Length: 310
Image (cartoon, rainbow, N blue to C red; front, side, top):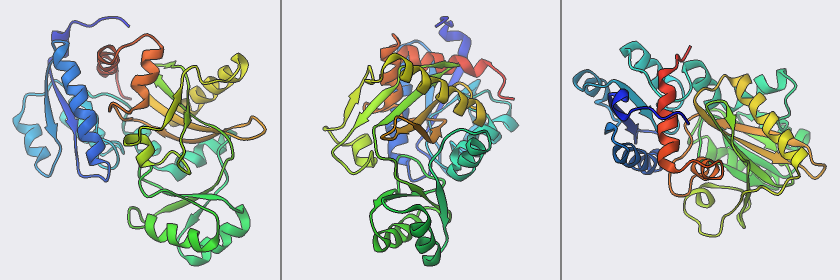
């Protein structure tokens, strides 16, 4: 990483918290990012993004913004558009890529149109859709709100009654609910930093899937780096990750979640454009494996804000 003089960043606003369902995770991520920037000598301060944010934006002197908001309102293009209107450079992907990646359905449609593998799926609007999806896709299935992250509202189901219950629970978070075929096999997450695909991480959990608790709270979640794939398969996974990010148009940094089935085929699940940066988070873990400590990672992400977002 080419080192940037901390003073060159100017006054940096670290944007965290927000009003989404991922607020608590974002508060933790924001505290760690802010601490790392300040320790590096960057003139950084935090803003817990709330209803008064537009006023804060007008009142504060802000030379650039580090966006560590997770979920809607921060990761979906809305904050990116506001900052562009205000003429403030920011970290991460631009408006289009942020909005696209936040929509799991549209992301899958883009990947499918380009021949990139992603599990078969259906949209659930009512109980009739649940029954049709069960017939078409079979069980087990995974139910997801289409516009949430951190596994919020997700559930693995094994029968029609559980599917209907999971759909009803998920629609409390999102009017659009997605159901996917369950892929039997290991899960991987792969971080991308300024065009470089970092070492993949293999995930293991005694939970039915890598849910919110396994991500942020549990002490029995397993992370493997090296990920256990042979060299050819690992390269295949990294190449697929790069194609997935290119298709969505991500910039700066991102994290892609991938499953591998029993035949060795990889399946793209989703891409995150403002991943977690807590003590349980995966991008810092991958960065360490690539030789970057947390402070270097944060500075690299911030340095990318000098690049145009469009």
